Amino acid sequence: MERMPDAAPNVAADVLDHIGPGAQVIVPLANGEPTAVLDAIEEAAATDPNRFEEVRVHQMHALHDRPYLAGAYLPHLKHISYFLSHVTRPHFANDSVGLVPAHFSEVYSLMRMRTDDPLVVAAAAPPDAHGYFSLGVSADYTASFIGRGRFFLEVTDAMPRTFGRNQIHMSQVEGWCRSDRPLIEVAPVQPGPIDDRIAALVAERIVDGSTIQTGIGAIPNAIMSALGDHRDLGVHTELLSDGVIDLIESGVVNGVRKRLNRTKTVGTFALGTQRLHDFLNENASIELHAVRYVNDPRVIANEHDFVSINATLTVDFLGQCASETIGGKYFSSSGGQNDFARGAMYSDGGQGFVVLHATTSSGASRIVPQLAAGDVVTTPKNTVDKVVTEFGVAELRGKSIRERARALIDIAHPDHRDDLSRAAAQLHYA
Image (cartoon, rainbow, N blue to C red; front, top):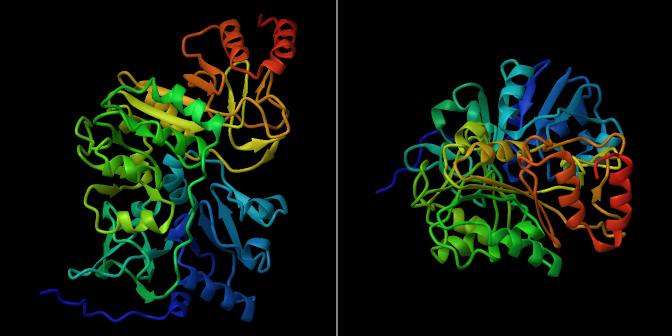
């Protein structure tokens, strides 16, 4: 017979008792954000602007827009981002949000470096009969603070109880409160014909028994759909999305050939629909681990036939992939792309795929002679393996600069190949 934990919850505003001058607040990414707790912090800042002094909130990929993100309480309360979202992007452009460049695998260590006595405020599933909370859909950098930082939790029944390295006992938290807030749902993007062509080119190069990392979006969703005839695949990825459900339920993904966490599907956070939340809830086949483990290239390299699949925005003739800027302006950040590209490079039989449409929505080529001024390289030329567009696969690892340029021109849109060939000749790459 289950027993309920003895400790009674607090209210969200009780978090204010734990925030002093110069406080450094850590917030999980996406649906790990405790909305009622942050509401209470903002309400206090609005009521008494001088209550906070140099308080900084550290977070990746925020999903909820807030006045403090727009600078409403500067300089007292400021957001420090480690990956821009559609919410924080305009605020960064307006100078009210800071951005720390970072590989996802290193975000915890960077936060530790920048913070002293951090307070983690996080959403969680209700405590179980043994008094353990689950951090639900977000282990990310937050789980690494368990036992290394103070915690204040916001419990919601909508949060799925997940397993892995993301549990924290009631005795380890400063306090906790309840809220009835729902989780934000992100519906799968439906692939189009171009996405399906790219997916087919990738899927035919993936061998049975591979361990896969892929993200969210039209091309990753198409790739997941294209793997239905494969056998004994494993998943070790930063992001778990709806696309993995059908592969697990059909038996395509079972993890039996993995070397690490055998038979388990491993991720560090989840983002998707209610179907995904329901699938994750108390599902022992899924484990969420801290990102400094999941994304560590040295861990990834232990898996044989590891397949990394990541999207980019632009690739130049050298193979440099610019995935976080558009026209020299910041759009996102590095995330885990380079983590997994490096891990796949060191894996026995590993492959790293960088995928993109050959042209932009306006028809401009995404294969370019040189990156635009201000564009940031996310996956460097020495790490990139295979670049895939709807016109083919350019295998770049071990190739000379001229061989790279030729291979990339061959997978560019036919309308741009002549101009690209002339540019290659001018650069002495032809």
